[in-house]
Image (cartoon, rainbow, N blue to C red):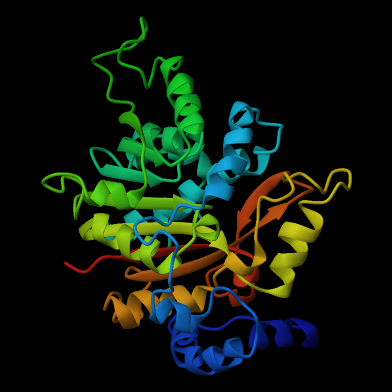
Length: 345
């Protein structure tokens, strides 16, 4: 092995359990550093709910208006949401590994993504799934195709209408479609609701509280007003033994450069995200999520991957697809990453 390979092997890859012990021990020093900086989201703000103009909701009106204006192009796979369409494969792969890890203590990362189309890998079969911030339904439909009984919720009514209309024209997802096969078990069910998650928890008899096998919030956390209330609401919606899975962006210089400076620019082939989509101060680091769920909520008290996992991902412009980083590549979490945590029984 060359010297350079030895260096990267030694410096950039940390065994999984040691890596999260590092996250856990480092968060105190990190908190002191963050206090000296003008960040809107700090660890001490995750410890104490900040004052809000409207404390009953985490919805940002400016964010909702932004996505309302883009509602007509959600399903244009070469448009502003092309990266989300391309991200579905790694979203599903991360989910698959989370669920299969419940059944088999093996590393499934080498499984072919093409096998996800097999009925043997319909790991969400009959599972109750909530997709928070579903937008136009890009990921909700993927969850239903994996067998989940999916409820997609979003605060933007125009996005919900887009999602409903798109599901109607798919004969696999719409029971009222003339070509719908009632005897088929290839897909789950899908429904949409315009709502905040706080409103779900306030419904009579609390039909949603502690009831979902899987709660997803993909590319949503960086758009909410109050991350603490939002995350605790996700926890309240998850049943004991169920999973929360997030994808979001870490707050680093690299993420600012890639997701805002470049992605929201007018540069050809690079500026592919509508300007104003992201706010750097709303980005949250993986260590902050680990701290919240482990220290405040008491989840994931061991360092087992089945209880809590963070995986970085990156967009490969040459291959025009997203890729998951190896589990031990902690540097992969410096920009986009997935976070999965299991609620204790």
